[in-house]
Amino acid sequence: MSSDFETYELDFGTLTADITNKIGRIPKLAGEEKTQLVLNVDKQLEEVRELLEQMDLEVREIPIQSRGMYSSRLKSYKQEMEKLEKDFKRSRIAYSDEVRNELLGDDASSSESQRAHLLDNTERLERSSRRLEAGYQIAVETEQVGQEILTNLHSDREKIQRSRDRSFRLCTGVDYITQDTFYEIYIYSGLKNYLDT
Image (cartoon, rainbow, N blue to C red):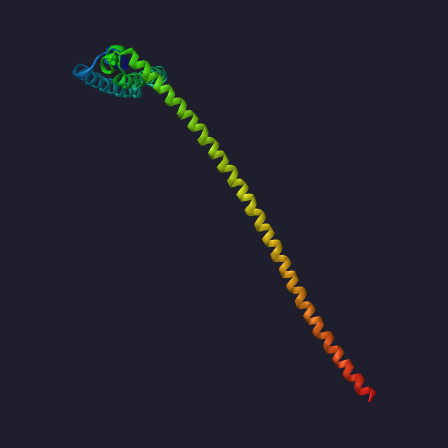
């Protein structure tokens, strides 16, 4: 079984070397030639994925005593595959200097003016960002002050309500006392008049 794994390893090494070579050539190409090479590499990457699946199946069938060594080798191959896929993705969107100059033109003065314009726009953007941050900070501080004012107003309202309730109770109590006192005075004066006669 390990001989099958080693055969897969040889195939893996051959395929990945070829893919690496082609990935390095992709940015230098354009048009149909680039498209064909991208399709070819994509097909080869699929073959590598299938090889890795076969290797994984082989590792599962290897006795446990020997499995650790093959598992670590398989893990490193999977990491290499991930790196190849990332490189392939980057190479598909990358262009070499010649292709870039061909697409954008080779006018150096135009490039310098574009660079100056880009730097100017970047500076404006940074200034605007700083202003926005300052405005946001002011808004946060204003919100905090507003919250404190609302808390103070709520507290003052509760104090006023309590004072009003106390005043009402006091006035009600005074009315009762006043009524009782007048009634007692009335009775006393009526009784005194009665006794005097």
